[in-house]
Each structure stands twice: as structure tokens, then as C-alpha cells.
Amino acid sequence: MSHAMPGLEALSLDEKIGQLFLVGIPAGSEGLASFKERLGKRPFGNIILFSRNISNPSGVYRQNMLLREAVRRRSGLVPYIAVDQEGGIVARLVEGLSPLPGAMALSAALGGGGVSIEDVTALAAVNGSELAALGLNLNLAPVADVNINPANPVIGVRSFGEDPDRVAALASAYARGLSARGVLACAKHFPGHGDTTVDSHLGLPLVSASRQRLDEVELVPFRRLISEGVPAIMSAHVLFPAVEPEELPATLSAKVLTGLLRERLGFSGLIISDCLEMKAVHERYDDLALRAFLAGADLVCISHTAALQDEAFDSIKRAVLDGRLSMARLDESIARILAAKENMAAPAADVDTALQALRTPAALALSSRLSRASLSIMQGAAPGSSFRASGWLAEGGCYIDMLPDNLTGVEDRALRALTVSSIIESLDARLLCIRLPQNPNAGDIERCLAGLKDGAVVLGLYAPDKNEGQRLLMSALASLRRERRLAIACLSMRSPYDTALVRKLLGEDTPVACVYEYSEGSARAAADFLHGSLDAQGRCPVRVVHPAGMNSRAAVGA
Image (cartoon, rainbow, N blue to C red; front, side):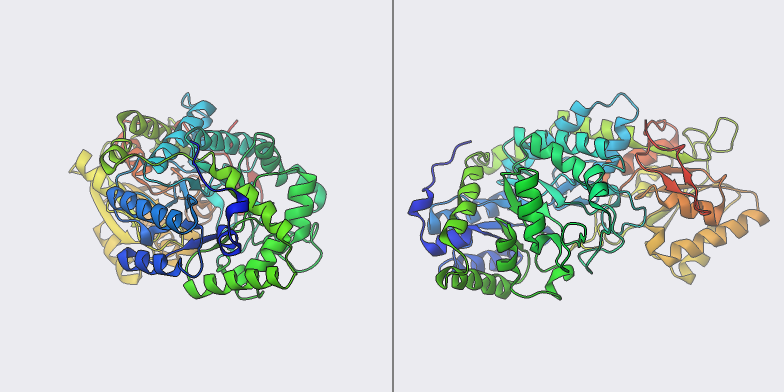
């Protein structure tokens, strides 16, 4: 894994400053050409890819080889080429790669079905192998946030759950799998994004917990990851007044990044900022890159805008030249960055070799087994009810498929064509499937209701808390059930917390199952469950809040 690269003393000031940046580039060949041209003046050292930069696996490989060569020609150094490949609802690379269950799906699978924590490490190793083959060497995963707030709009199923020790064990297992394949794992979002009600892409969240609560909950996974040598940690754009009394998010706080993370927790690896273009910080603070670096960050991430990247580079250079930023502090970060680069895997030797590393039979079998093991009954299904442990549509009925427009809410492309309804139809052409947009309008709802026949109706849900049309449909189905012989159940294709909304609008006796994400693996598992060839084995790793305010622990995994 070792790469022959120049040492710190051989780098010019510009080359050193360039190593501090993780920058996004525009899409396509024009974006690559413009980035290469910009390197002549500002030698940015590291790149982050988004869906806009992702075509097919062979295109990604060729692009990454060109990026590696361009950066190496300018500075002699191999770049980090980073990506958010968490699995589940956050996966930048989809086409041609193994489908990866996300964090909460993996946690649910661990609760039943014979899945072990070693399987989680093995899945992460699959992720790492495929990324490394394509020339990606830094994965901004795993999520180490403890999701204790059901109203969290941005973490949710990206978390391994609400139990700090469980999250710690699974996040550490995932990091081990990535590292075993020479891909740097970056745990996020320090010191914890799991108890927020604001999406930091859109606003500035606040965690008002005491220092004791942070020690007992949020910091538990990070302490374990640090003890096991996780190479990188990403900061959160979140206010933590118990640690930082000024109105500064963790990314800009020396008390958090240096005082807490470096000094108190003893972390010696890379500190990477979350993207500095996110609205939590971009619209509130100035000179963000310099401030993050002075607070303790090693790598600052600017994902989209070339002008902002150039301004940040120039700002840090001015700070060095006028003495506000010492060369000693600069060299500390450069030393960490270069040391970590010594442990990165090399990409595949050629595109054909890279493609052979993807979607291997063993990887697909493991991914499928974990997705199938994650499917969880949340409420209502019992041996004596209309809906039992599986086969909800085995004797006929209707499936209403909510087709997601956008998986993460902050992603830059819609998702794939594979749907639960298309798989159901391939299994049994007699079944009625109705496809609706993620937020159906009155006409969509009227068309759906007019097409229903008496019997079993399974409503596929996708973020109904954020889509009023789904809630209106649920209320309409509740009224129609009283008038006709309809047996209604719900299948959540994203969040177990949807169960609380089902209880409110359709009643506590309405069966609910959950697969935690709308992905290739979960879609196939959901269709097999509805058809009767898969029993629910997963155990949900979070509690669901009852509409009256009481917590139901019946669905929490052991």
C-alpha cells in the first residue's frame, strides 16, 4: 500500500496549502479539464466526488486515473479521492457496484437471522474493495452518530441506532472493514449529530445536552473508534454549548476540535471538516476554511464552488505569510495527511481488472443476506391476524408503491428504475400494483382509490412525515377501510419512525414492516416478504414514539 511520495520538506508553500483541501469538481470532461487547469495556480491536493461526477464504473475508474495523474504531476503526491459511500440511502456510486445496506438496516439485521458483527466488517470490506479498485481511497463513513431523536431530519437510518454501545461496536466494525482494504474510514459527525432537529445542510442545529450526557451518549462511539485507530473523523456543523459557549459550531471551535477531540480524547488522526458550503456555516460565518483550520481541522472540504475554493486557498496563504498561521501548525497537518496517504490502497492496474472486482458472487450473496435479515415487523402482524409474519400479498391484493424522487434530500440525482412494484409484478402478474409519486396530489390519490379492490392493500411509505400527499392518502384509506372490506398494512421503505404516523392515521392494529431504505437489496427483500418467500427476522434498533407520547419498546432489538 505504500506510495513513494516526496516528504514534507520537499513541498513548496503552495503545495502544502493545497494538501489541506478536499475539493469538489464540476461534472464531465469539461469539469476535469477546468480542474486540471486550476492546478497550475493553486495545487489542490485532494478531491471529493458526488453523483454528478459518477457515470459508470469504467468512467469512474478512467476519471480517477486522470485525477491522480494530474495531482501527482503538479505536486508529486497522490490525492485523496473521497466519496460518501455509506450504503443505504447515501451511496454516490450505484450502477455496477454491489448494493450495500445502510447502517440502520445492518443494525436491524444483527438482531436476528444469524447475522454477526463479522458480517458487518465483511460488508465494509466489500465496500472498500470496490472503491479501491476504482481509485477511491477515502470513504466518508461510517456514521457514528447515535440517533436518539426520532425527529432528526438528516441522520435517522444513516445511524446504527439509539444505543451508544451498539453504535460504537458497529461503527468500529465498519471502519475495520474499510481499513482492511486500504480505504481510509472517516467517522462522522463529531461530536454527534444524532440529537438534532435541523438538517445542517439547510440550517444550524443545536445540541443542548450537558457534558455528562455527551460523555454517556454522543462520545461513546467516537471513543471506541479512536481506541481502535480510526484514521479520520469528520466534524459536525452543530452547536454544542456545553463544550463551546460561543455561538460556534464544532467545525469552527478550537474547544471542540482541539480541546475535546485532540487533547481530551487523544485523537491523532485526520480531522476533516464537513462541507463548508452547507448552509449551517456558509451563510453565518466568514473565512471558513481558515477558521476551521485554526480550530484544529487538517482537511477542509469545499464541495461545489471553484471561486470559494480559490478564495479559501488564498486566505490560508495570506495567513501564513502575515504570521497569523505558523508554519509549525501548517506542517503538523501536512505530516498527518502524508502519513495517512502511505496506507492507501493502489487502484486496480487497468479498467478490466477494476471491473472484475465489482459485484462478485460472494459480495452479492453477503449483501442480499444482510438486506433480507434486516426486514423488521414493527407492529400488528400476528399468527391470527389478516397479516402474518410474511406473505402479506401471497393470496392476492394490491401494493401501492411510493416512488422516491430523491433518496437523501440533498443528493444531486434521483434514484434507479428498480422498484418494489416491478419486482412484485415479476413474481406474480395477478397482483395489482399502483405507482404514485413521493408526494401524490389530489388527482393521484383519487386515481389510486378508484383502482382498489376489496382485500389486502399494502401501502409502501417513503418519508410520509415530509410528504403531505402520503398522509392524505393514509387518512383516505382509513375512511375507505370503514366503508369497504379492505385489510390495510404498511411497508416503510425508509424509516421505522413512520410507525408512529401509521398509529396516528391508521391505528395501532395496522401492521407495519420496515426495510430502512429504498435500495436494490431492500426492494428485493420487501417484494419477497410480501410474496411469502421471506420471513421478517430483523429487530429494529430504535424505539418508536407513540402518538400519545409513550415509547414502545416492543420493536427494539435485543
